[in-house]
Length: 594
Image (cartoon, rainbow, N blue to C red):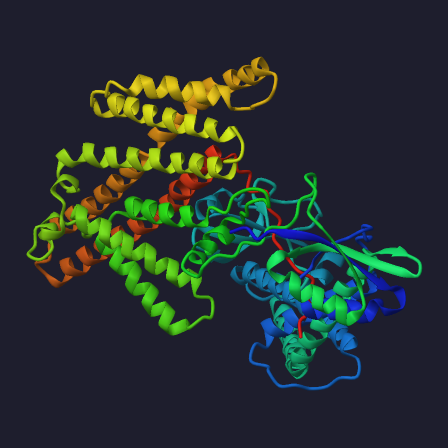
């Protein structure tokens, strides 16, 4: 459920602001909204120091990850400056090292040389130029041209041409840029750079024990920045100061007791219609397992929207099972989840519990459809064939119509539930009747879709559902005293929304289509491996590789389909009928970490 919020104003004597903010931060229940917008560049000095410390801590963590001892320093900010400069110097030296290595690789085919001798010859009027050409072009060099082939690299020849003037003697060939240093000089420079890099790494290692102190200081500065921003966003009525924010009703008693103890003034109001309080969702543990999906999508319902966690969990589980559709894959998911869960032992249980639920649902759906790794013979094996529902058998073409019908039923039920939720929210208003009308229209649309896709005759009451639903949807879309205006608004919305009902129900056929595609891909790789056979050790290795690769790709494609289609049906089709914008701001109370 979305927890109701109260807008609160806490009034404090301006001489007690620091103490009161510390108490409020320790309390950690008010989502503070600034009364006056603080400047973004303030507090600048604290932010600059925090940035330096965070950068230094990341460098130490990356360069010396094993450092975990604690060492005091008189000025940890100065230490951070040293670390940052060492890192920048190291980066420069690494770039220089890379450039020297590239130059060395470029010069290796021509061998070492004495650069001073070449310059001395130029002063005497003898010029040496370097060129590259294919080995076949060497014969085209004029006989009177003094040259020597000084190296080869694959089909490329390196030529040194000698002339008594500064004009290029072999202008038709590709010039080879003369180096600024000889190979031996470059190697000496590389050695010096490596020595400097070793010194820098040594200095960073010596500074590594400061990492824990850096982390402590980062935490302290973070708290100071937070306090400073809160303080700058407070309002002032000399000799009083005040801050505003939102407090969940479930935690309001704690705020009231703190106000009495701290001798603060406390103004409590209901949020105004134009205000946007933050969203706090609190559910039972078994419903909260869907929260990792919301975090992954970075979606949150608005304060005045709906908490659809339960509905989302139920249908997302069904969609996952349909889209993957393979009991064998479900066993792999379940086993992998169990191994990772036992190994990591994280406090965050929601992702693992969700993975368990999705895996079990996939196994159940795969078992009733007889799909085990896309192998038909497994569905006929003793002990497994009794689990298969004949009308849903994935390997029978006769089952396709029933599976599609199930998908349409799921779709009609899913979007009808959206209108049930919206109608219940508006039960005190005549608008609830318009949602009843849309449920009737969806029911009629279901029978029409069943006729168009599956060629099942419509029941005689289908048109009654559509007409009755349309009448309710039009009449009560915007109930008001001006009846004609209300009907006009309803009529304007009716055509497009009715078409949406048809298209939304049909879109649930993707559950059938993707599930069949997953089965077809698995069966194709199985057939490929069977064609190669398992007669010799080499064929066994090849066939096993094909099976592992093929099913691995198929699992990845199925999981991507869940992200694309399973999420879409909840976020677009279902949420569209709820008129949800997912516009919520997360409840983030002002809290000082201890």
